[in-house]
Length: 66
Image 1 (spheres, rainbow, N blue to C red):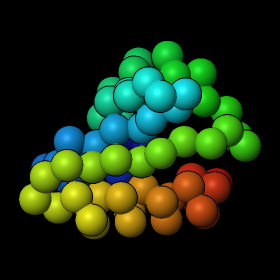
Image 2: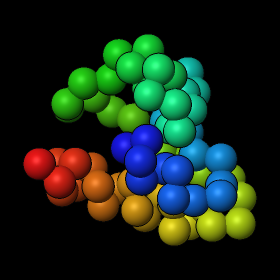
Image 3: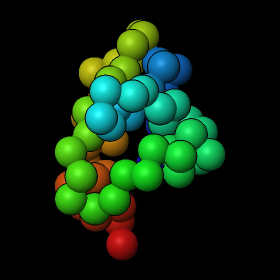
């Protein structure tokens, strides 16, 4: 997810349990404790925000290309 988030200039975040984590930081995402099946919100703010959300959602839908 970090690799995907870095493709965009927008600020990209993952929100879990009302806490926002930087999607461009592996340490931040790991500290979220999110696991498969957890409900998260993807938020992007910036010039390419729509594309960023779509790209990350597609990655998730495809099980992170595994």
